[in-house]
Length: 473
Image (cartoon, rainbow, N blue to C red; front, side):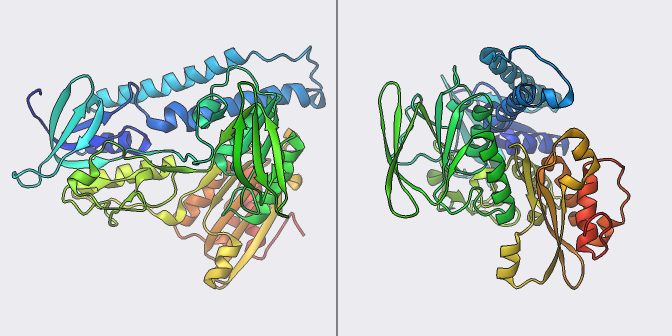
């Protein structure tokens, strides 16, 4: 092995949580190293998740717009044709720019990068010092006062639907099909499954989504999920809810999915590819958690509110700890854990973490649903406004959906917002900011919004929740 190298902080994993933790640690004057098992930085999100999927979603939506809606705008086009390799090349270019950007940030912030599998060992006799072994072609030994575990997550594989990388695939392979499947089967009606269903349906695939629970987007606002299902069905996606998948048979050219319907009847569904998208699970393989004595529960690393594990000097953030598996949640934890290590008051407000699904229309949410508020016995008022009554939405032809604002019945404090409609993922941010500062529905309602803009729909919903609607009945 090479000589030991000493750092104040060693981060294992370079996804959104890991690389942000490394940057903030370095900014705070801590000598920092980051260990990544892959050749490019950025983790799942930048390489095979958030970024490439959004690139394909944008390209496929433009394709659909030209093919189906250009004439509405008085735009005449010739025969529509798809150049899938060019679309994939653009996606890869976007990914390359962003992963290259992360590498540049590491260099600018003087973070030392190691490529290989990072494994933590137990504390040495030298108080509060840990050894991290980086294994690639050779092995390097790093010494760290503090170790941040940020190893992310991986797709859940069902035992009766094993990934083969060809016919039964995860989202990774679904982001890189070399041809549009004539028939795509999707098991799982969550965010990833619906986004991938949207991409390939827009490009011409006959898509069927199978969801075990009674609604797509389980756990989301029921009205929002129902509205999204209606829009996806307009796109041509067949959605089967309350349907249990029991297995699949594959040949070289097709997949036959076996399922049980809500009435108990058996059914088979034919497809050319099968995407299994039933969630993600923490990825800690090879990190040496057991050997180091790091406690876990149900696969997730156990931490306190300062991200400390039971092992002194070892911290964990992101998908491997409790909470939603979201890149922005991991990023905020990355900042907070670095500040905690540096002796500052790092903190994440988990009550105002937004969630977005980038279908068309987009859906976005922050805070509890109506059902959850009722279950908790929290009195609330609801304000809702349709994009069909919003001037900018009418001008652009994107009128599907609504904004729902929930405020406390007694104090008017903002509790939640649920949006389905154009740019929902962008619109949710102003509500998040208002909630972060304990704002009320009236605060949001009395904030001047430019006209005509989509954010006016948020204001109108807040006006309704505050009991003073202007452009709605």
